[in-house]
Image (cartoon, rainbow, N blue to C red; front, side):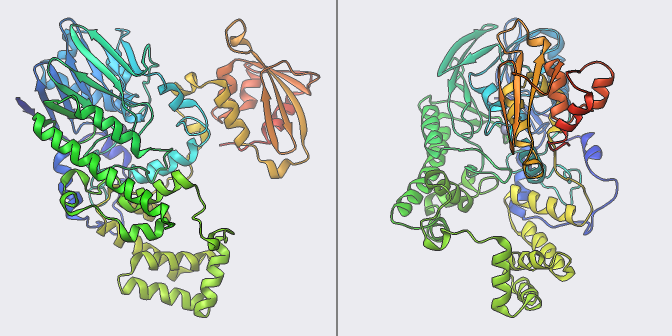
Length: 585
Ligand SMILES: [Zn+2]
C-alpha cells in the first residue's frame, strides 16, 4: 500500500466559525490523551489498494473515492457542499485532477447522519449518478418521532452544536477534536435522494468494480457497509471506530441496540478483510489477522458491558449502582480502540438500562419524581440555607469533588438564579471538567455551555426555520403536520376550536393528498387528509410555501400579499390569527 500525504492547511471555515477575538480564559488545557488523538486526523489522501482512496482530515467524515474503468464512485460525500468541495479539491490535487477525467457514476451513503450525505451535489455535478443507500434512509431523515428533520430538530440541533464544539472549533485553545472526527465544515446541504436502495444485501457492479452492500445496523438502523470482494477492502462506519461505542450521545440519540452492533461486527469479521477503511478516524487498518483481532476485541468490549449491565439489572441493581461495579476487564481496558474518546461507558450503561426498562429504576424513591426546585429546597434545608449550600459547593470545588460542586451550584441557581458566587463555582467546575476529561463530547459540551453562559458565544435555541432549504423540499407533508402539532402553544389557547381547510395545488393529480382538514381542538391539532366540512376558511397554496410558512422560513403576510397563499372564506387576518397559535421561530 502506498500512502500519499499532503501538508495540513488552514481551512477557511476556521475564521468563519470562531470569533475574531480571544476567549477568556485564552486557553483551557486539554487532556493529553485527547490531544494525542488528533494525530490520527492529520490530512492525507491514502491509496488503500489500486483505485481505492480515502481522504482523511478534510471533513467530519472520510469520503472514499473508487476509480472504475469509465467512472468514479464516491462513498459518503461529507457534511456540507463546502466540506465536499474541500475533499474534491484534495483528491484532485493528489490524484492529477481525477474528477476532470472521469464522471461520477454512483454515490453511496453508508447511513443518514449528516456527515455522510450533504455533499452529494458537489460530486454528482451534471452526471446524474446513482445514489445508493439503505431503504430506510429517508425514513431516518424525516419520519417522526426520532428522525433528524422532524419533531425534535430544534433540541437535537442545539445540542449538536454544543457536543461538536462548532462555535469554538476555530480556537485551538478550546477545541481539540471531536473524538472520532477532526472538525466540522459548515455549509448548505447538497443531499440527493437515493435512486437505488438496499434491503439486506445488494451485489452491484459499477464501472467495472464489484460491490457488496450489506445492511449492518448499529449506531443507526440504516447502516450499510461496503465490501469490495476482489480486493478484500471493507469500508465501514458507525459499528466500529476508534473509541468505545456511543450507545448514547450528548446530542441525544434514538435507540442504539448493542446487540445490533454485535451482529453487524460479526458479519464484518466473517469477511476476513485485508483492508478496513474507516469513514470516521485515521488511516486504514491493514492485515486480515490484525483486523480480525481488533474487531473481535471491539465487539467483546461492547458485549461485556452490555451483558454484565443486563446481568446486574436482572439482580435488581439500578444503573447508578451498576456503574460502580462494571469496568472493562484488564485484557480490554487498555485496548486503543476501546478508549472513551467519544462513547463513555458509564453513560452507555445508563442508556442500556433505559432502553430495556424505561425511566423507572425500580426503586420506590423514584416512583414519585421530585421537581428540581423541590430537590434544591430540600438540599438547602439540609445544610441550613442557600448561602451554606453555596459554601458547600465551593468546598466541593476546592476539594476536587468537581461534579458534586457543579450539582450543588446548580441547586443554588435554581433557588437564586442571580447568585454570582454559584455561577463562578459552576463555571470553574465546568472548565475543570473540560480540562480533565478525554471524552471529546464532554469537553466540547462543557466549553460550549461555559462560553455561552459567559456571553462569549451565542448558540441560543435552533428553530425549525434552520432546517436547510434542500431538506425542506424533500420533507413529507405528514412530517410537516407533526412539526405543526408539536409547535402549538396549547396552554395559551385552550378554548380555541377551529377547522381550517388546506388545499395544496401542486399535489393535485399526484399520489399524495392535496386537501387537508386542520382541526385545532382545545389544545391539540389534528390534521386529516380530506376536504374540510364547513371550515372557517380555506388556505390555497403550494406545499413548499405552506412548509416554509409553518417552519417559520416565510412571513405569512408577505406570501399572502404576493399571492402565493390565497385565503378563501375569510379575511387573511384569520390565517394570521391561526398561525399565531403556534410557536414561530
Ligand atoms: Zn458520521
